[in-house]
Length: 275
Image (cartoon, rainbow, N blue to C red; front, side, top):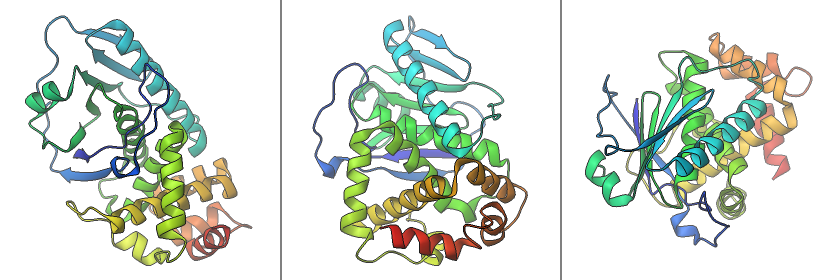
C-alpha cells in the first residue's frame, strides 16, 4: 500500500547536532491508499548519487548525504530487527530511499499535500532533506519490515501492532521522539488508557489529527515497547511468528509469552500497571 506521512516527526538533522523542537511539530500520522504497481513519483534530477548497502539503495544529490542516510537506515534496521528478534530476517530486495534536495522539489515531484513530510509505496520511501527525514525513515522502515515478515494479504486487524512497532522504532532511533512520546503517555494515556479492544479495533481515521490520534499512537508504541522489554525479544519474535501463522492475538500471546502472560488482556494489564 502507498502511505503518506502527515507532518512527519521532526528529529535532529542527519548531518548536524541535536536541536530543540516544539512538540506541536513532533507528530506523525499515516494515510494509506491503493498501491500503484510502478513508481508513481518523479525521481531525482540527472547527476544524483547512489549508495547501496546490504539492505538499502539510497539516492541523493551528493555521495556524502546518500552515505549518511544509508548508514542511518542500516543502524535503524539492525536495531529494529534485534528488538523484534528477527535476527535471520532479510528483505527480498533492497529498500529504496529517495532523498530530494528540499521541500519544494519533493512537493513538485510527488504532488503531495503541503503538510506531507514523506511518502512510501511498495518498498520505497521518498523524503526530502530536513529535520523530519530521520523520523519518517525510522518509522517507515518498521512498516516495510513488518509487512514483509508477516507476508499476509490482510493485516488490517494488526494495525495497533504495525503502528506500535513503527513508533517503537522511531523512539529508539530518535531521543527527541522518545521524549515527546513519553510526554504524551504521561499527559494523554496514563490518565485514561484505551481498552485493548478499543486500541485494536479503532485505529485513527485517515484525516484525523489532535489529541485522540496522539494518544492512540503513543499508547500503541508504549504497549509494544513494554511487550518487547518485559516479555523479551525472543518471545516477541515468537509472538510475531504465531500471528504470521494465523493465530489470533490472544492465542499468540499466550503461547509466545507462556509463564508471563496468558493472553493479550494479561499483557495489557501488566503494561497498565507499569505506567
